[in-house]
Length: 73
Image 1: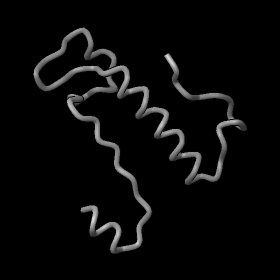
Image 2: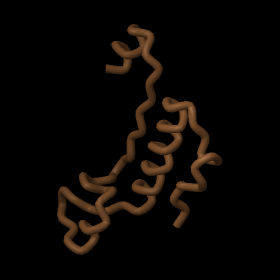
Image 3: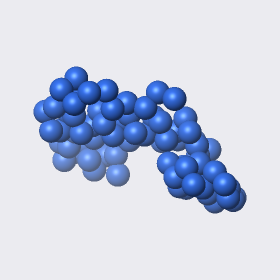
């Protein structure tokens, strides 16, 4: 996939969270973890901030004009 995206001239990035299980952004999973599902606060926080930065870039907005939406718990 990475070669195809680069060959097509697409600007892309991928974030991989090693050891993080499915539904890692879902806080309600914290009450019922399983082998496949688990909330991961650090990965969820990073994902949220990365998504906001991406949206700011692609929509030509800056976080300063919308207040601080980052998550820093």
